[in-house]
Length: 81
Image (cartoon, rainbow, N blue to C red):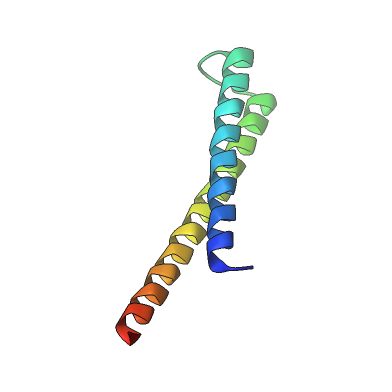
């Protein structure tokens, strides 16, 4: 898979994860109001959201690294000409 294709795939994944976290926030707010309950169910919801944020952060770091690699490759191509 070409680097640009991988970058596009990561960007799509990030968009989906943002959409998903927004959706989870709406569901939790509808169900519990502005604050999660202080019980096992509330902790489960918090764990789900934290997991999504962790995946999002990892994916964003991968995207930044891929774009930096692409920039360096472009700089080398320009320097070679």
